Amino acid sequence: MQIRRGAAGLAGAAALAMVVSACGAGNTSEGGSSGTEGAGGSSGSLIVGTTDKVVSIDPAAAYDNGSMQVQTQVYQYLLNFPEGETTPQPDAAEKCEFTTPKEYTCTMKDGLKFANGNPLTAKSVEYSFKRIVKINDPNGPASLLGNMVSVKAPDDKTVVFTLKLGNDQTWPQILVTSAGPIVDEKTYPADKALSDADAVKAQGFSGPYTIGTYQKNQIAQYKANPDYNGAFNKPKVDQVTMKYYTSPDNLKLDIQNKQIDVAWRSLTPTDIESLGNVDGITVYTGAGGELRYLVFNLKTMPGGTDAKKLAVRQAMASSIDRDDLSTRVYKGTYKPSYSQVPPGLPGANEAFKDLYGAKPNVDEAKKFLSDAGVSTPVALQIQYNPDHYGSSSDQEYNEIKRQLEATKLFTVKLQSSEWTTYNTERVKDSYPIYQLGWFPDFPDADNYLSPFFGPNNFLQSHYSNADMNKLLSAEVTEPDQAKREALLGEIQDKVAKEVPTLPMLYGAQVAVAKNDVKGVDQTLDAAFKFRFTSLSK
Image 1: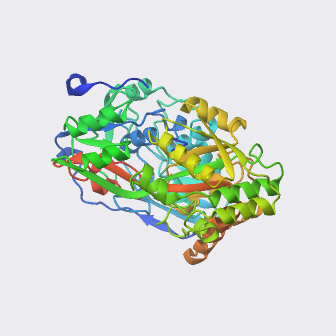
Image 2: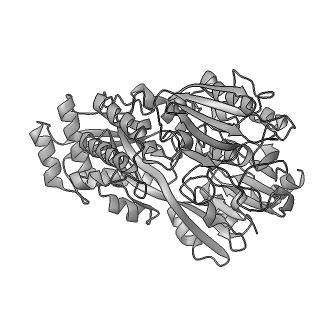
Image 3: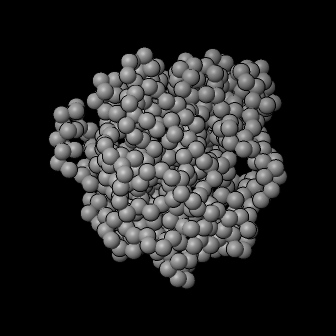
């Protein structure tokens, strides 16, 4: 997720070259080989550029997109997503299944080990999940394990998760998130996160790649792991170097000049449009999932009473032109989203379009306010972040301001702050209305609902609703797909009626690569994991 999601980047290919040269019960998943070439048969090297930043290599202290990119390459999971799949398949496990409605049991493969030679067993899995909960790092993924009562390894081959809610339809997917990497119990401390330098030194990695040369948020050299024993996602190239950029301008320049092989996150819409016309360069777009939305602090937003605050939210929902934001600001790289769940996921609907229309309706907005006795114009203070969500946030929020003020029903004061301050202040009730973005943890509609509207949700915006909690529990534990989708639709309808958040846009994944690079389109799938193992030349 983007909300969950350094140092200056090296400038130019010469500096880069110096660094590189220096260095439901009964549900069962069965594993199988994909037949892809393993590390022993891989060859060649690639350079990938990004503006994402790594918070921590240690999974216990990382719940962000930049860190997930590292985890995807170097850690093994019990289950993982093969290319193009949205159903998790066994990776370190031979099989995983519900052995009772509240017990999810995985049987481990034989002979697994970390890059440092230490064995990887069910005991390693138990240790990994327990330490995430124990450390409970504010930047970590412990919140994803809210349904886990316990995890135990009765022997080296078996690990049993005991859950609060039975038949949790999302649990197999949670095992593939930032909560799922398996770490080495002999080198990762139980009560604190390991520093990046110590993680690289310890080599407690068992994924497709290990890390060699590493300068945090500058350069990272990944080497194919000859001991990786997963069922799929095996390396096709020996070495991938990740170069980190502080500016999308420099990232665009390097891929345009073919000084790197792939640019992945985050080029501006204008840059993407421009690069599409460069010879020898291909722009790839893949399955979406990134969501851009507004959050209302129900305690501090304008209105005075609950009824008036609701009217303000509903009037705003009737005043936003998503098509205009999509075309004017993002040149179509983001599309209108009329639900908190982006289109394409099972159970997604367009509840906001059904209630408020596809285009702004000033008369309807005015009626919401007048019926509730709200005086106009309503003074809105909207906070946004100018860097974490891309350099187009300034344009996006100035356009939102223009749209809202064009109705004559609102006056808007925009304020911005850097990410560190922003993410701290938003949970202190400092911002009445504010911008957030979301990258999915896994491709399921629940991942756009429970984290936002369930008990102790990460928004901390004072939204709490007992009926919503019941609906969320019901959909998570409903094994019948048709019934579950109906519940998901009911939840989205409720969100649109109450407007605790205002979804606006969803974005496709975009990567730009030299024409001789293969496999980019394969990794831009709904699992939202950028896999080096998909890439080759």
